[in-house]
Amino acid sequence: MKTTKKKGFTLIELIVVIAIIGVLAAILVPTMLGYVKKSKISSANSSASSVYKAINSALTELDEEGVDVGGLWILTWDGSKWTGGATADDIKANIGADKRFDKKVANFFEDIKKIKDAKAAIKGGSCVALTVANDSTYTGTYPGGVVTTDTYEAYSGKVDDALKDALILASGGKTAGADKTSKRMTFKDSEGKAMTAPPPGDYETLANAASTKTANNLSKSTPTT
Image (cartoon, rainbow, N blue to C red; front, side, top):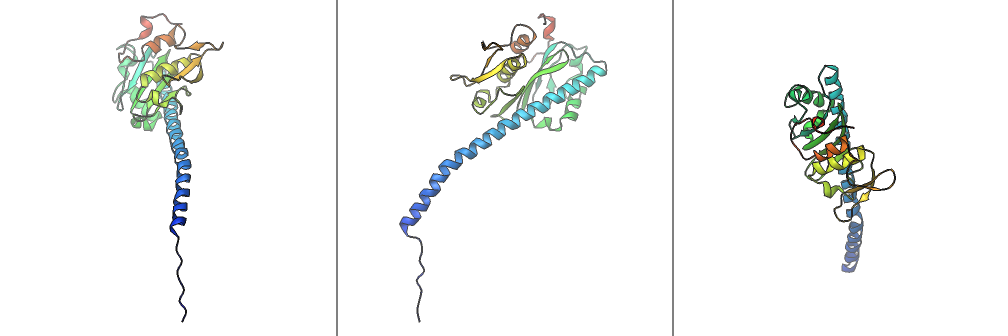
């Protein structure tokens, strides 16, 4: 009776297979991580766009209901409620937990409670720029283009900086790539000159106030354009 020998892999063959797997992993893992990073950034920018639209819809409805939503001011979201506004006689009285503005924004964007932090710049009854942080790493803006795979680390957890740069875009600036030192986005104007801030006027006023948590109507102390 003949017996057959079962042939397995030799040690050299196993080493070759392991080496091939290692090479493939070295190629594929960074690529997959890159896709994950792009997806996270895209999600944050999409969230910013959704909140931007929700805020403008809420402001439009409040204006139609007779609430004065004019002026320049910064809105801040802390994960549970909005703060900010102009004076106690107008929009400020309608902003906060369970108040009209917060409820309207939640109606237009049901996932608002999933946003960790957000800041919005309001000009003349409209949101002109906004930034959100979905988590401690990924920040998104509207207008988009500020946060990219090259710049996202510079804006991680820094909604104030992201809002300032979003205001440069909103005022007519164009993105010009990441700064080699700070890794933040750089900007240029229509003539190709570098822009480090919005031009003098309302957008500059809002950018200067991007770090504030006060509820002052900025247009009452600064001329608007």
